[in-house]
Length: 639
Image (cartoon, rainbow, N blue to C red):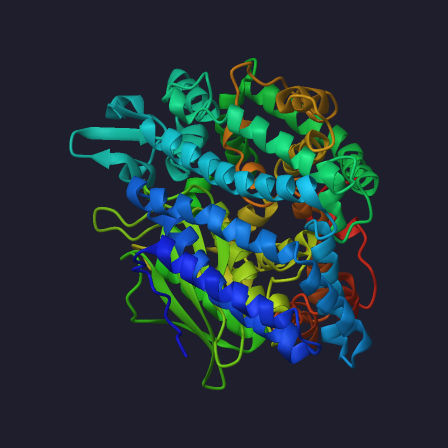
């Protein structure tokens, strides 16, 4: 049993080629077989073996990027894509799967089998001749374009820096200054922790504008970065190929193809859902913006929103966001997170001393009654060679003697000048969110890798466990456990906690509108042949409360859609947020953390993974389908 990832991969092209050759032999035997153990089991086991290698390669390319490794990594993408294309278009294997419907299977197996058959059909198994060849070529090209988009975004982000003097940083406190201190002054960059500080605290409006313009024009023809990193042509080709792929399969557009594998029933259903949220949020959002404009006393521009929002929030609730930060040093935050997980799900979580791919990475073990359940590799800090954002990636599923392993990655500030890393509360919410994903993967009880953890879960269900976890980090007992002033050692006092809760839904309707805008744009850009920026302009007529600057090219680094798997599925965040708010509201009324209801969520949602219809899992936990009332209540939106 290998329970430690190999973070020193050598000859990754040859390794992938050898594994693929082995996989083709596995498939050849499976397509001639007639029972579960000789058809699905060997393929499931092989795909887990291949998945471990591809997961490590992808992970290192995202967290330890180098041109040398990326060049080899890119060579593996067509090999992997072509292998899966060969499997999904293998008519003999497809027939072997269909023949299993006439054998005796348990309910989990029946569900997995039907999902697999549906997957064959959505992957072009029925295509012939030139159509089949073209479909395969499209998938290969898309894998390369996705990596190119991500690489361009990373390099464009890293290319911009600006050295500034201390007198240009009025508004910054010790914590913010520590993040950008260099030998000869201070250096701003476009890494998320630094960028957000500029937008939130920097009094210098001209400098805020300069940083904002650099940020939203990354990887575009307007950016100050190299033209080699312009992603627009990459985006256009991705969208064109997705449309062609959908058309080949008989769909009108890619949004239809995407919806086929999700819980929702149609594009129209989700557009109606999003329009409903826009309608219920817009008037309150406009009132929030009017309040902000009146407070600022100037014509607001995009680089003003974060700064004046923080000032207004400070006035309304009599505290600064930065007042919270000293109370949340990294180690104490993690202790509070771990204890919350332990109390929610009756497990133990602790750090172990084990080497990893970078000194920053913590290795965590989850156990129950002394027995190992799984492992999480936690990579918290921002680095120049690391892709932006936060995510969870699964390395190894529960299979046989192998325990689940997950990677959790964030881009937060690191310790500096003898101080521990101090986290803003929004960053703590992000950590809880990603651990929700990791727990979904690690706590599974499903013994079929293709349906264990997040595998086999529809994309609009994947975000439920992560968004559900977010709610708990606002509870008083949880905040107490994860707060300790790094100097005074005092926990967060009641007056600051109360102000945090009072301000939790500050400008929540504006935030709701923004997320709905992204989701509607994403769907409409995948059901139209129009230029994606023209689609955005049309969508913003209904969702935007203030104009965007003409130089904004933020879509050029929108990795969720162009390299992160959320294409025509960004709505999943809002759809799952309905489930999460409903779930938390229910658990809270039934006793909260440690109650039977919280264990019911574990047993019926986390442990069952993709082994049955996801809504059936939710209803088994909740007793009924969710409504949007809890979501609106959680966001403080009154209708």
